[in-house]
Length: 446
Image 1 (cartoon, rainbow, N blue to C red):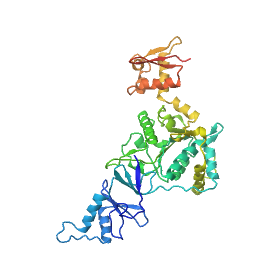
Image 2: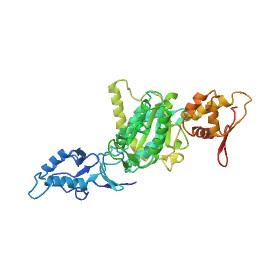
Image 3: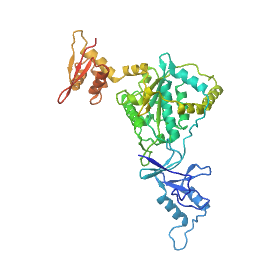
Image 4: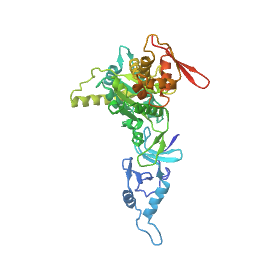
């Protein structure tokens, strides 16, 4: 769904606004809230209630007195005209869009505020460069090209006022290594607006209107859950947000509307096993939609012990952002890292993906299989359907019945986990497709 802009610099009559006396301003009616929007003296949009808008119209010379023989006053007639002709279905900030009037399909929306984008300026960025070197480079490799490419695609799209899909970016590393600092810098690079989407993405609320006001959706591990249902919901929403251009905006107590925000998601987690558990289970449909970078703890390029030193460090980083944006817009993504879908290919740090896989529910199933099916050296390969295997693992005679019932708590869980194991361990887990069913061969560990 495309959004068509109506240049708000044009006159009130040309942009479709009700023609008011010269001293007044163009006015739109937000029927969802029952309020009005008009421009202030600085060119921005402000919301007014009916009492305030009446006061403004009276100051513009619109009479509140009802003439003889008329049913309504000129003031009420003007209000009815605004409500009937200048209604908007959505009013407020909209991620990635500049202030103005737009058409979404058949509906008109009012974007009240523009993102504060960093203007590219040639220059040096030594402090920021040193921070990124320490955070993302180690003896095993250099992860900076993946970050540069991810940022380049996002920043260029925002500067050009285009939408472009992009992966979620996860930063995993030790406490106080600079992960959150990089998140805050990403907020500055993407318009200066951030929102906290985790409750919505984990299925804890259906209301999400606040997310549409920010380009940067920030998730931190201190607010995330290791519950498998929340993690599955989280994974499904990552797929939705990173790929789909249109999203359903649902304000509390108001009518939902479909909009096309520009979003980028970042996630920071500590790299201990229990913290990595907040990330969604990795599967084929998710792996290309998640950039997984490992962060390292190194000395900061400037002192950060006192509040004054931290403020000076942040100020230095902010001052280098125009030069960094210029670098991003002139830097070329290496051919081997390009992606037709996202602009930059996904990357999973090997140690992180190994740790995440070891915590996956299918890995837990493998441990139960080895303990239950192959508990003697002479045990041979097991054959049967996923339903038969689930019945055996959860049955009264099983030694792992309690753990298996908790693990296989939803329909088809056993078959799904076996499919994932077959991809990772094809030498042990083999699928046999029959005419009306699928059978599995599970071989004992070596």
